[in-house]
Image (tube, rainbow, N blue to C red; front, side, top):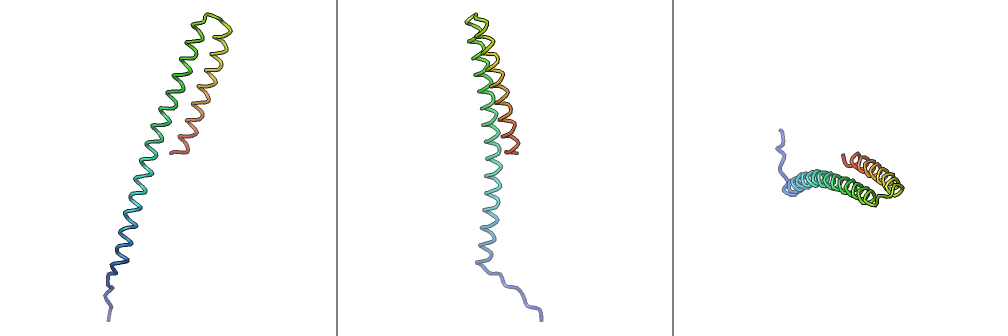
Length: 93
């Protein structure tokens, strides 16, 4: 005679809780990725804007060597920020 399997309320509760925790964890990971992406975008835009302001301020001095140094520093800063954010985005995705 085949035996009917009985439902165990403890096992059922545990499985339900596990499913809920799994779903919550997936949502948390997805939201963290979105927040990280926004943070990286904001960081990159801020650094690029600061570098542009730095160059603009240096050029307002009308001293050529100061403008040249500021351009070089700003270019380095922009490139470093882009590289950093690109690497961070790779880790986030």
